[in-house]
Length: 157
Image (cartoon, rainbow, N blue to C red; front, side, top):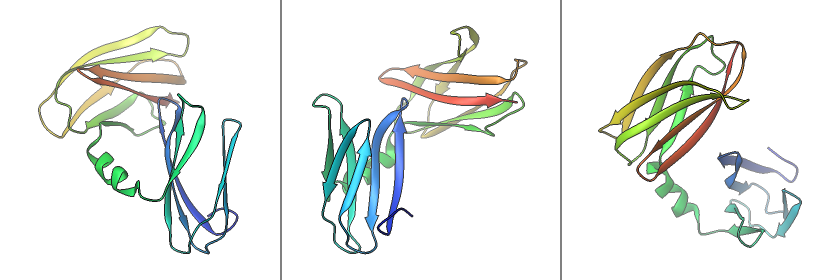
């Protein structure tokens, strides 16, 4: 919960705000701040609002009808690394509608590729296990394929 009795779920893509879903529990005015931008709007008690950052026009967009778009995003491509943080042994799960050959690159923060693998995804969800012998630190896992470009940070303890 936030000030003003709002419930907020924030979703990021490639390290930037993709969208946030805000539910107003009291019907108070809402102020949203992101990347130096501010947007204020009135809410209704029980109302659900979507906030998106429009990078092309450098502005925040508020939409009370975009909740249907979020339901459609349920089939959007996503990656998950479990557990995270990890001791170097983890599972990558790729979910969504995109299928086919995917390249998986694990890269250190200094840009060195630690491991490259290929995953042939033939259904809604595919998983691959990894066992890395790498120093403790933060790493980036990049999944790419036809129309696919996803990144996820993970930590090796």
